[in-house]
Image (tube, rainbow, N blue to C red; front, side, top):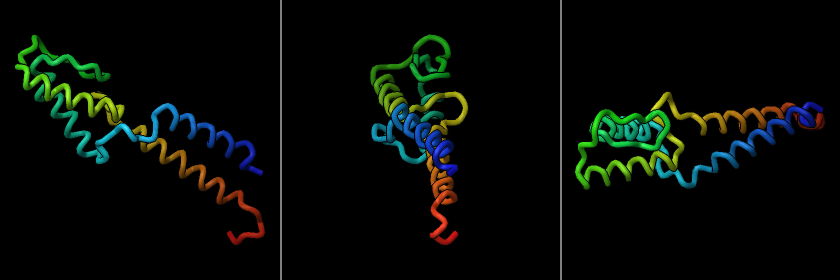
Length: 119
């Protein structure tokens, strides 16, 4: 049976991804477009004014020019993005990769079902 080797590998890979990235419970931003807007907002309203971010690929430009209220807003935006494993570089597609792994596993299970079930 195909499922014994390849299916087991996919199940293990999917479980490792879910354990590593979590199930997205901490991420409050569910819409990818909103996440991209928040990243652009962080770049334009924070990084260009010298805010130092801990997110991967987010480089500040120059000396900090933020007042306390602006810094607090930047901190809040960064915290939301960090919970979603967002970065300032490229696109943030780890959730898409998890779904692809799950769908691939379902296809393998479907193809490897007993012959008594209709195909």
